[in-house]
Length: 100
Image (tube, rainbow, N blue to C red; front, top):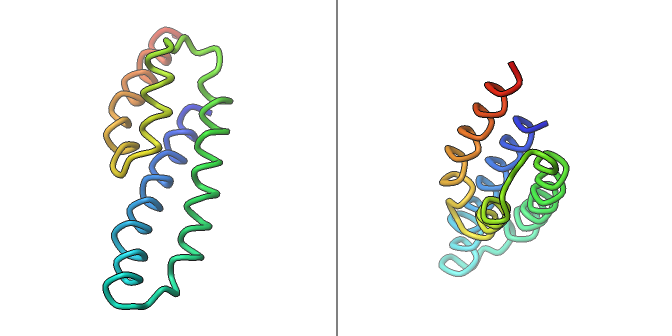
């Protein structure tokens, strides 16, 4: 489940960048707003999936309140999920090492 969460996190980051770097510039710079509604909706669903999957995947995994906050805040900023991924990868490795 943890690996699935990391995939959702990357997808959420990609949709954020698509919205901010493609759809919105097309709307405001070139007066072509057609991509904002579908990309915005996909990003909205990706954000909801991120939060829901985060709760399910990380609950009971020994995350500190600061680590929860860091992972939550990462979804609110462009590039945040990408910058948080090495941290999640380390946590995943630690959990796998402790399991064996």
